[in-house]
Image 1 (tube, rainbow, N blue to C red):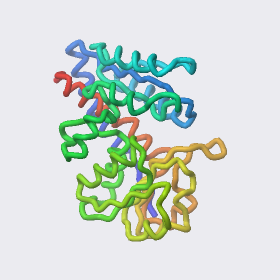
Image 2 (cartoon, rainbow, N blue to C red):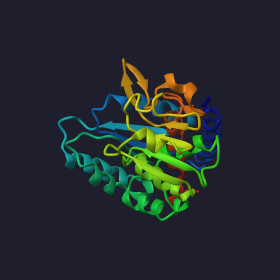
Image 3 (tube, rainbow, N blue to C red):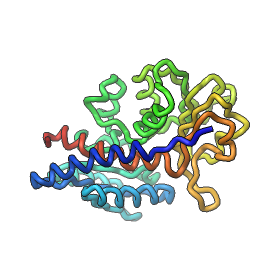
Image 4 (cartoon, helix red, strand yellow):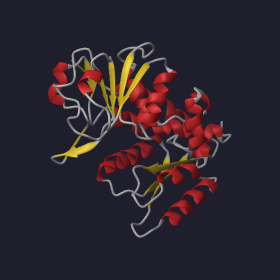
Length: 281
């Protein structure tokens, strides 16, 4: 059993980002992110606070606007359009999930493709599906999952399972794994016999927000668990994998300290790629 640590990857990305940010500042450009919050999900708050702190440490400005609970979808769209047109804003983040009364798909369509730090605009998603990741912005959480997995082994030719088919992790992750020539099985809420499906896989990527979904009853010594789930259990931030079963698997990433921590840094690499797409060099 080995705990997969993100520290070295995080430190490497920070050094690269800080150097580029400093170079922009010499030219009189301050990389700036606009974050718009329209969620009542408490589980995202630690992630937002982490982003704000890390942005400041890297010299990146992060502006945060919270859509009031009395504001309707039209006001949300207006905020995004203002950010799209503001040349001092180089990247936009919509912290998901958003409230149920707001149209998430429509919101993601409105974000300027070249400012879409999370890579969820349909145009960016289409380029990923076409295998053209170098020409688009890839979602940060799937990138983090892949980087952590590759500390253990190459993904090409490996059997992998992705648990969850959400728009921010599961769906784009499955496509990005296929782009790396992995053999991918997707498990979702209608899937049957989880343990049987997991058995032949080497890598298991999970992102459901269901604590204990992966446990001693369905994991084996051949499994590498990459946990992107986020939930609270007894006021503690946890993932989908029950760490009590850690001695049953080959390796696992922990929550917190794994995918989430790495994701919080990769978004700043995505910001720099957005700026490159906008013509900043």
